[in-house]
Image 1: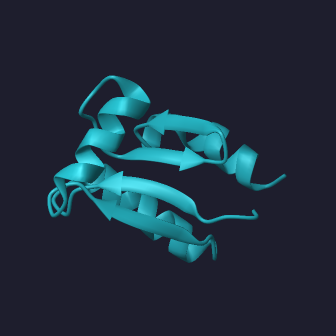
Image 2: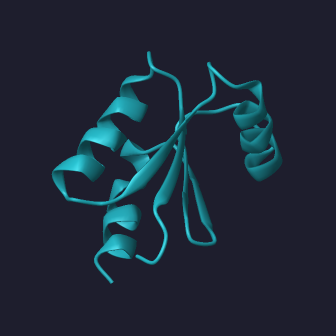
Length: 80
């Protein structure tokens, strides 16, 4: 990966924490955008997805809403 993954999250979101733990365990660089601390990040999620849903994960030009339900596609994308 050329650039780190972006993950829009909130601290109390279990799926967000699962995603970040998965990336750490696999040595995948990511930047965490805490939507609770900065409303600008929540607005970015809205612009990307039309929803207010976390985690929203951006890998290159792909946007994923949710982690667990997208895990197989995300891991496949990261293995290439």
